[in-house]
Length: 238
Image 1 (cartoon, helix red, strand yellow):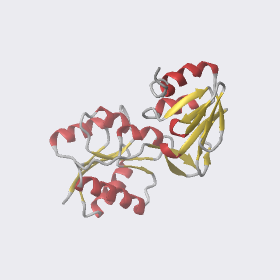
Image 2: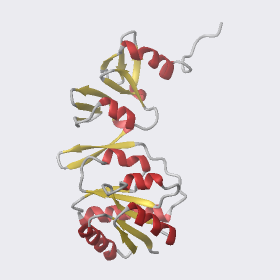
Image 3: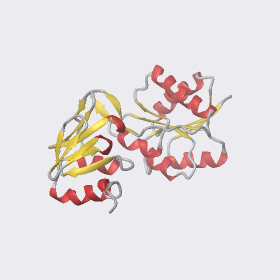
Image 4: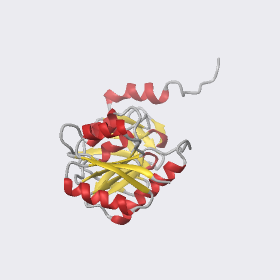
């Protein structure tokens, strides 16, 4: 079993480094390198590609834009030297996200994920949605289900989980735009809450499962009724 792999990076030095990592792995077959999205697209038309190892920031079209443009995409591992892209990458369900400089052990972990996916391409796996936040020099993965609520604090967003609190530089509006599905509900200009953790909805406040009290903003009250209460209210028949 060899996985046909295409490396896409506009930096020739990084092309060589990533290509070397690919060549050292007996599971991977390096079929080529490209320095732009258009070159990569041409390669996809010519050759069966199983895996893209793709830089994000490139001229003309970013790696993320390129993958999003593909109707049927190979497996993707994103690599980048920029620490601000991880939150957006989940939009295309990549196998992994690697930060340059690439740690060899971390690279092997990514390829192991590729191997498992390659061996079970049709296996339906229910993966709880997640996002990343930057903490010091690392990215921390946070599952939606682990979040109690989020609170806007000036230029920061406090993300409160069952065990820890995070404070990335991010607006609550930007976070709301990028969250998938309807797990979270905006109940106040400064608060997003996990709908699964709502215990009580009062006139002016919400009480979460841990007892945390969250205020309800006037402009969000009708939205709470429409999205969370209506259709789920059990009443006695007359």
